[in-house]
Length: 457
Ligand code: SF4
View 1 (cartoon, rainbow, N blue to C red):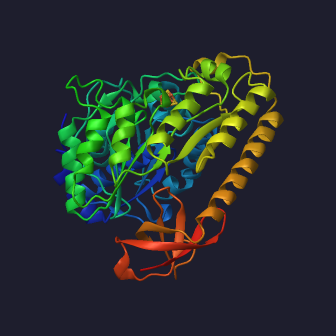
View 2: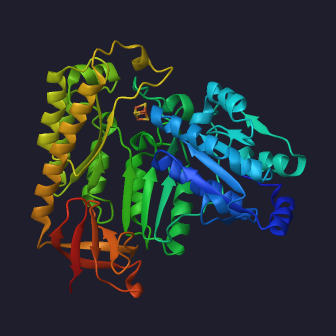
View 3: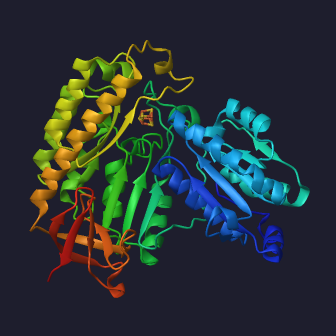
């Protein structure tokens, strides 16, 4: 399905007359970041410009996440704090989109408790956003929409990225896995792959515009193509993307360990562009817990996959997601997770205490672990991860890495920043003419969460 905005010209006149500005507040994952870039694209195509901050905006859009309970509470807090802004200027437009608003009970709660919200749309309603905005602006009607997710994929949505060197590209939407803790299949629907020609066209276009790095996105990227019935796999897509001139770095997230096929490993091994930092979500290192999570691999299978990848890509490293305190996880079972952490020595760990999500099977499971125990496990994991990071950083000192210069460092504007292929942030002295170029950087100092380097030869 192609995106069309028939309301564009009419809204443009109104926006120009009133010099309207938008502000987007994104919660959650890389998929949401990508959706926010699309909402920015839609708004800018209608003449809105980006506001410096929320106070200077006329339209506030919250792109929500429902993976953890605290993200939901954050939204309600932020909506509450906008009541004053709306009172002061009743023309302020407040929009809530994304995973949270794909749930009927959330729509009801917003209607009841935050009735000054103008637009509430779920994950599948981006296509109707221009129409809803038109109705709010021209007819002064509030717009709350819940539609069931269908199998359509929407193409040609305008998109504005934060960076002019790095861009994310969705390749597949939804998920069929139904991990018992996860709400994603309920709010993002079943797997739907984009056609290869649409993805390749987008990436070629990005390369022409000077983009150097792409991040392929999907809830389960290595399921890519299965639903298309055209005999074209994730490995085929990687091979074709690898040939696009101008793109120098290709990353992807997230693959599911159970679907990590041999041909994908071979393509990565033979490519000079595909990052050798692979995200391989573990969730738990204990086989009984993994079964309760419906992850469909065991501790041994996960470790065997890591070894298989290492045998073909010797300099590979891994990042992962780990949930501690899943319902019923015993202290011994948590030790299995720590055992995998010790063995794999992850480059990055996104770690969370289990968060109960309504309408998922795990929400009904017997817990039996106190909150204090969960926090204690998280602290143990954090400490171990710090040790591993420190150890790895020390080994990088004196080594030279190819780094794409992304721009000025956010923490020190006299220095520039970029990432190694294994995604370590490095800051170093450079100049503006080098931004967007790939340079050789020698690592000279370990600062735990980032490294200091110097450009060489
Ligand atoms: S693979 Fe599991 S954790 Fe990931 S999105 Fe699908 S259901 Fe959620």
